[in-house]
Image 1 (cartoon, rainbow, N blue to C red):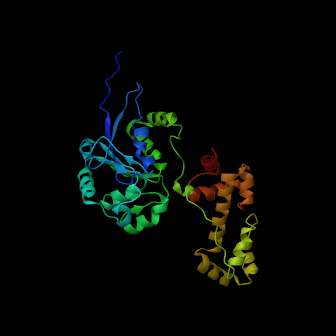
Image 2: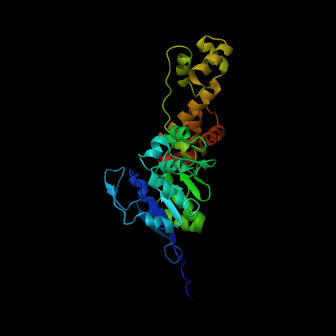
Image 3: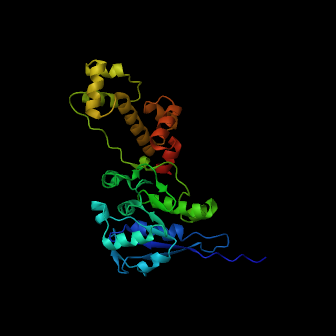
Length: 325
């Protein structure tokens, strides 16, 4: 039986901008360019360019010298912009004239995909106005400030708006590349790419599970001593009355002072500390989930599972697998 003729590969252009993140520059070649059909034929043609064809500095201290200039952008079906570490888009929400012209020409003609901080480029071009988008959680504040018209989602790993897609930082670029393959050619093809690179074909949850959780600062006055006392007793069922009695205040005064000092109610603060303790224990110990739930003050595994899922979108065992393998 004759093997059906392979369709023409989908053309992908990777645009390397100055200060490109070197790790992300190679992701489209590996995770999109590596997709093949059942006969082993490549489904994508991936090429890399710079705007003027000249080498650009990377985040790793060397220059990348792609073989192409911007001419390949005009025949591409998909254009991927890896993240950047500098430039007017990051600093001021504006684009250099040559980059603005290129993005303007591509809008509506090609699928545009940003990895990590290149969401700033698409937003500066006005392509994300009124749309959901994401970027690395470290840049959430700057992104919101520069682009108030964008519906920013700091938790998800990527956002697919059809012809414009954005992802969170670094490894989330892998998730987005696999999503594109899965969207174009199905889960089996994407899973085959993932297996070859020994990565998960689909990660649970969003990027909030990776956001740093610093230990809270405890003041020496006001409700600070009571917060320090509570941190040492998170495994106990602490009530608002007990907290107020420890602070030697009425419940009403304690609640008002507590919110003024922390920005949260006592119940919200306690839940956040219990979630932080549970996450730390899931990351760093092999204790059974039941023991973690008790030590963190949730009482039951079901309660911890419910609160953890509501906060970061994953169950305790899935969270532990993410960090401990």
